Image (spheres, rainbow, N blue to C red):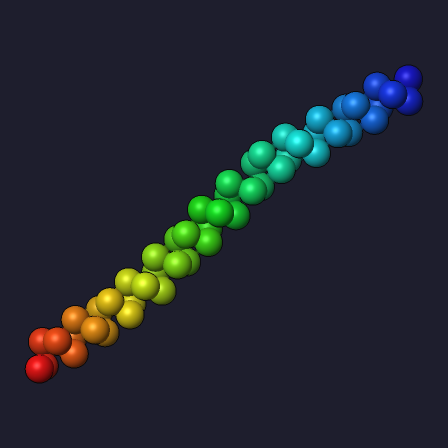
Length: 50
């Protein structure tokens, strides 16, 4: 019975990691795109002035 409990807990941990890790990566990419988008806009404004 203890082995089944350990197995279920480990499966639940793996499933949780499969959900959390990609969401964390996507959130990081979204933030990175927003940060680089703002810097690109600033550079484009400077190019327009020159």
